[in-house]
Length: 166
Image 1 (tube, rainbow, N blue to C red):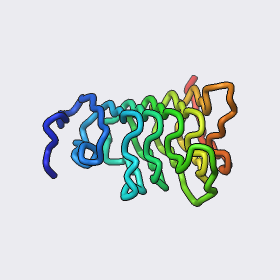
Image 2: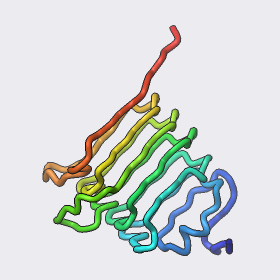
Image 3: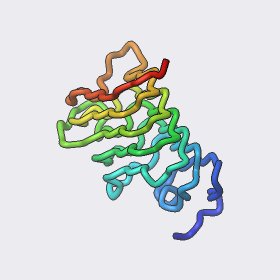
Image 4: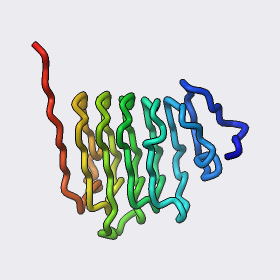
């Protein structure tokens, strides 16, 4: 893979991307990832698997991103602490619903404390599976009073066991 001149490929880096070329050149050692608003809406990008970013601590996805992604995998990211997804991301259309077989997986992220998902994101996803996120303190889905549905056709599964030593 060729390196993009604006992306630092060292561990402990903070990176912002807005194009598919930038996305494809990301190094695995990044710790904070930001995706700019209205980005990565390429029809060829249908699976978003972030498992290679083992050092990732924070993810911020802007508004109206990843509209063609059918499967999101945040799995086994042991250092991940925060995920924030803007409005209208991971949704094919702004106002219509396409009840399809699209999936969101957040699993085995023991350091995750916060998950925020904006209005109308994942509106046409049929699966939202959150599992083994024992440090999770806060889930916010939808952040306005407008009742714009996120995961409107999905059942929510939250599976974790928290064992505390006394």
